[in-house]
Image (tube, rainbow, N blue to C red):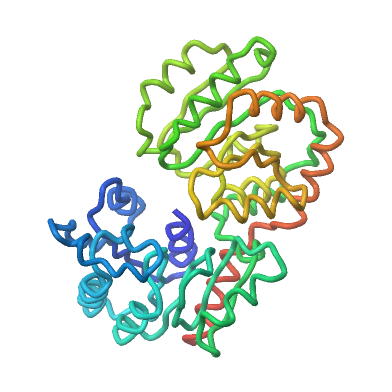
Length: 347
């Protein structure tokens, strides 16, 4: 999704973008096509591919095939595209893959936020870098001439967020409407857990907007919980959450790119990690007083959520101050800054 956001800004500025993805379960090929971008869909893994994975590469199983095969097939796809930039966003790819594919492109940019493997690139983007030691974490893992773009100053947000942020008045910290969204998928059924808490009598006065992604494992369960709740509406497949975030006073969700979308609009949040790559940044945002972080999804109990929700509802002054702090951190112009870096380097 963050690459789609970047591609849309590139297209808005007159550039052409295509995606190279693999036919894995839940792949986003149809979504990419619906947004009007070309998709080179690499073939699905076959029996035996997983057995050949390089165990020395972090997160190798996420790729589905050996990196050498993926690099070869990707390079073949790039040969007829002849791109100025190859933008790599995958936790199982490292410097070996990037060097192999670099012969088919003028420049390479890597998007990462784990800093747990080596890279060879012209630009590296980590929009989730919120601690002062992030640059040092990458220093020994990148080539010396790699340009680092670090922090929410470069957060990949759609242009609608910057526009909405300019028009949005100061939030007063009062909570009467809650937005629930966990992400494109919800492996821990966190949406249902949030709704079970919100369906309690003490939260009956709150209005709810509930959004589920196209890969939610049990949409019928969510639909049933929403139908049984007064003042609740269900949405699916939305291209952006900005309109719902504007009218919400609090969001119950997960980590990831929505952290920066919320902050751009000063929307307070209760956050649970649904993937390992979310843990560190959520902990850092909690330490800076920017979110209420409850930990990993597999360890979070409904009572913990209920207690946190009650605390937010009863603390309007804290909510107001936190909203202003978030809006000062993220201005929504990050995508334009990244595009400017890319265009400057190939000018």
